[in-house]
Image (cartoon, rainbow, N blue to C red; front, top):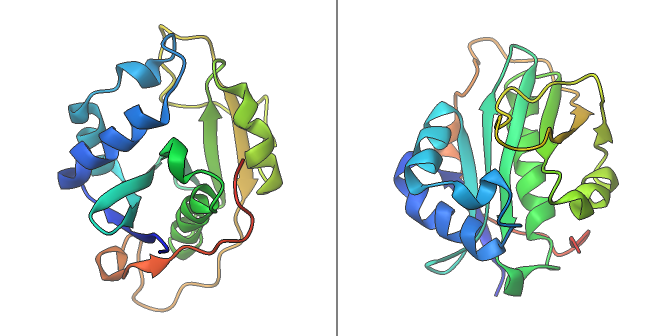
Length: 182
């Protein structure tokens, strides 16, 4: 079976959080201290997507606007037994679609100093380390993250379209199997 993506809301915080915790992270990372309430708050600031196989959440990603031109991607995770099937790529692309639809010039993300092995994954998707970029939500108790940025080329907005319109109309879609993450 092929997982499908659907928008995540604050009500999805428990399932979203479960995927994050199952994905694993160095215990020194602030990721490992994230609570369900933290996820609920974050999803309420922007949005996110869940990848589901039936009733099981197998992947997640969040996003939030951080300026008029920057959409920040956060909390990308795939359950270990579902890795290598393109779920991470599909989740990142879904956030990029939100950025393009809503007229953002770039997507920014931060990689923990305890998770640097994921940088090549993002680089394959067109993200580049930007030493001048600032991650607005860095945890002061953690080492500064590595910030990556990707420019987004948005189509011209149609009359009457605004940021966020249509988000609730997104339907689940199959996840492509190409470009599988490591």
